[in-house]
Amino acid sequence: MCRHSHLLLLGACALLAGGCQKHILTDYRPLDQAGMYFSNIEELKGMNTSDQEVTQLVKLKQAGISDETCVALLGAAHAHQHPFTSGDPAASLAQAGFNEVEILTIARADQLDNLSTDAVTLKLVGLSDATVQAVLHRRIQGLRTLNSAQIGRLKNTGLKEKQILERINSGMTDVQAEKEIIARESARNQTGFVRVHGRRSR
Image (cartoon, rainbow, N blue to C red; front, side, top):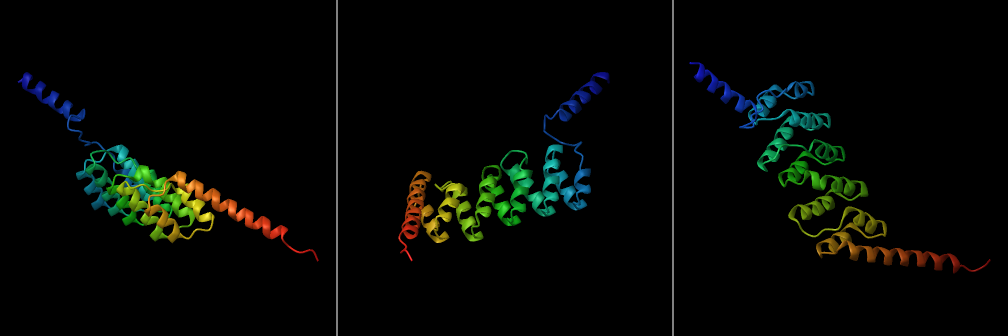
């Protein structure tokens, strides 16, 4: 009898130690306090959410992300066989104006950590939503794409978004973009120089 009890105790300890990675003692109260509905919290319980993931999800709620998207983001991370640790990147995307469908698209490609900073920069550059999505789509596909800083600099030289996209779609590299930026800035400065010193005296 004692031996049997001892074996049961060992089995319970192994389970609690994470042999099956069950987070049966996770504290979901922070999500309740953040405004998440009971039904969604129950869904998270069924997804074996950890305390660390709860902390990440609270950040999403504080950024105004819906319960359904919080659950979907956790599910996307688990589908890629890792815990959800991207609360800050997802929240920054939401705060920059990305909608939840766009955030989920990036998450399902497992690119939240890699693309969030560049995505926010593209918004700050002032590109249209369509252009931002076109650039991010290429990055998600793993296609060569100019970095956000170079895109912003090309825009500042006077190129239209259509022209920038043409260069990106043609496979322009950052080095090639740098050469064009220098050439366009030089031409603009030269034009300004000629205009100023070419005036007639009155």
